[in-house]
Each structure stands twice: as C-alpha cells, then as structure tokens.
Length: 438
Image (cartoon, rainbow, N blue to C red):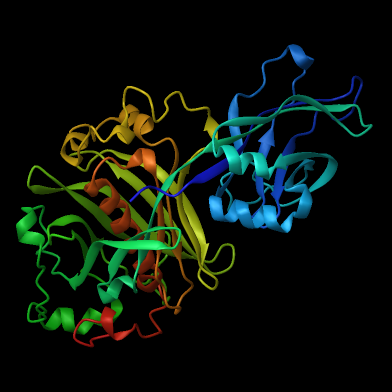
C-alpha cells in the first residue's frame, strides 16, 4: 500500500534586527508559531548586530505537519479564501521554564514585541503536495523598526500509517492505513518472560515466547506486587515470522517511600530486530512518572550500537498521564539536514535491508545520517483509557518490513509504559498481571 501524503509547513532561517540606539540589544527574544487547530511551537531567535550583512541562523525553527485530509478540512473551514494564517509572534524572554514542544525556546512567558502573519494558500499546497517557498526574506514588524528574517516553505512528508486493532497487551492485529482503506500487515504477541529467559537467540526461538508461571520462586512471589517485569511483545508478519520485538529489560519498580517509578530509577525496554537469524538490540526506551510539571509520563529513547554499548539519544520528553498525547521522534529543528531521501544513502529506494542496516549500528555519524526530519510518532492514551496506538513513520526510514516493525514494537512499548508506570497503589488490568500476583 502506498504511503499517506503529508505536508510539513517549515519555518526556518530566523534572524532579528533591532533599531539603532535601541535598549533592546541586551535582551533575548524568542518566536512563537501559531497555526489554527495545531499546538503552538516556540523557538529562540538570534539578534544580528551587523544587520542584513550578518548570516542568518540557517536551521529549522518550527514545523507543522498536516495530512492531506487535515489540509482539506482546514481549507474547508477557511471558506472561499482557501487560506490559513501562520502567525509568528516575537516575544522578549522574561522567564525560563520547560516546554513540551520541539523548539529551542525554554520560556514560560514573554512581552510581545510584534508579530508577522504569513498567509498559506491551502489550495495551492493541496494541488502541489510538493516543495514550495511561501515566504522568504526580511519583513518589518509593525512600526517598531524591528526586522525579522524568515523562510516559510511547504515540503512533502509522506508517511506510512499503522493502526493497532486493540490494546497491545491483548495481542492485536496491526493494520496499515491509507485514507479509508486498511489492510492487515502485522500481528502482535504479548507475553511474560523470566529475566533469564531473554537472550538474543535465534528468531525461531522467540516466535512463541514461554508464558509459564511456574518459574516464580517464593521470593519472586513475595515481591511480585512491588515490581513490574518480564513484559514482552513480539511483532510477526503475516507469514508468522517474527520481525521485531520489545522486551522489558529493567523492571519498573517504585522509588523508596513512594508508589511510583521515578526518573532516578526508570524502567526500560529493549527494542530488537532480526539480523542474520539472531535478535540484535536496535533501541532502548526508558520511562518513568514525572511530577515536576504535573503528573506526566517521562521518556527517553536511545538508538543502540550493534553491540548495545553506544547509545545515541533520539528523543526525550513527556506525555500527560491524564490526557495522553504523542510519543514523537522528530529530528527537524536544528541545522538544516545535509541529506535527503534521494541522496546516495537512499532508504526510499528499497535497496537496503534490515540486515544490511544492522552492520552500521556503532556509528554516531551513521545515526545522524539515517535519522533526519520526521522519524515516527505514536499516540498514547491517558492512564486507564482504552488505547489503540496509531503509528506514523516517515517513508524515508522504511526500506523493508523489519524497519516498519521496529517502529511498531517501539510504539507498543511506549503505550505499555503508561501502564507500567501506573501507581503501585492501583491494580493493573488482568492481561498485565502475572498469575494475579499484583
């Protein structure tokens, strides 16, 4: 099935020129990007003391991704104009705090200096669904004498979309979706494992994990309710062959004197993929309960080397445990990527394979080359809610079945982490309890 068409509205190359003899030059500023119906984003903006002769910060500062269906709905709401307004506010930083967005500005609020409205011709974007420059160059900010350099453009960002047909712990099917069409591509098998039962063995040895409960000795029985361990989910293709797996390798245990998993002692999963008839570690996901900004699920995802020693961080953020949110791996903000899907390292051509990619896992430069732009996202429901994760994967990151399956396994592990980090004063659903010990 073909990937789903998506478009990214990219804001980059920001630079600020202040009026001469201004008392603002000693201050710092940030930009807030607003597009109706989508969460706002924040990024810092540099002051250019040399004026227009200075080089602007050549990087991506913000990015809004919309599917073709979302663009059509936005255009319909816009009426006859078929346009939407991207508003860019320039604000003076007055406090520092943490933001949940992917931008660089770590701010809690700021005084408005001025704003710019960029009109998006939705009809044109829909007709092209390709790369186009919307606005590029310097603009005046009202009558303040402040000038802002910006580059706003639309870029195609096709994605494969997968949908779990049920909660991961219920061993559901996974469908690939395109519009109203969906077809099964994977099945999931949730099970429990002994800590000593998970070895990087042959693929066939992992196809049917043992679910025996006789392995628990009296000590494990005594402490079963105080830790969550041994959860595993294996992804199979339609022929029944295992193509990816996620296994809980560090138990989720409460911090001393509390009923929750803390950041200082997170639980962890290994995401594995088959390479030359054995399982090889591909990534490591850590999760914990974070109450520094309300009640949230914190996470960190690292790419692992072939030997599992070197770790390259790809994502670190948090999700509301009440409302849920999105687990996101997006390497968009920062220096403009030097590679593209049509570069010599072309995953989109399908010329690579899961086994071929495994041989390069030890290189940080390899990871930076491979993972650029949008990588993947998956929905995560709030604590206690029915969850059927929806997974989006950038088409340039999928060259074979194993590539897609690894992201599906990662999405399942992230979803299950919401349950694993649930307060230990609350009982888990029966599918997640080993012999009803918890």
